[in-house]
Image (cartoon, rainbow over the protein chains, first blue to last red):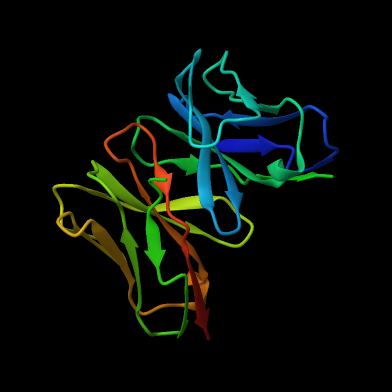
Length: 112
Length: 110
């Protein structure tokens, strides 16, 4: 029972590079979410998806792109990374929303 | 921003004491949830309380909700060192997404 996994767990990149963070869940949950966590801001929603091929913006979507071609995967792409995107990124899933969300272990991203 | 606020931002207690943290939010909700985050890890769901409920229990956790004051509290009784973590409330504001607060950092000393 793998649950929800994120890869990579740690990533260092340079300003201007494209980076993709992966999220995979084994529960066939309909909803998936991407958050970023920064000191002083708590968790902020970047994008979410209610089902395959349905995505919607959250609170801080600028500079990010998502897709959801399969129910179990929800990749997050930083098209041209900036230093302000240095953060810890969490993926979560839930069967319905707004109900209990299950979080992955996070990806720590450093943009130099 | 619709982000709720937890109070206090940080709390230090001894093992065996009770810990109370509060959450305030801004507009009407369907439900309010509490999550725990151990250092460097993902969040773990603790309790969900719906807008028509006033109190809910789970083991040593007690959550109350006062919709007239737009506030909730999380009480952890007989705290243990293992309860050391950050605690977040999250509200839905009648949408299909959650807005998380900035969290309360709880330190329980043995």
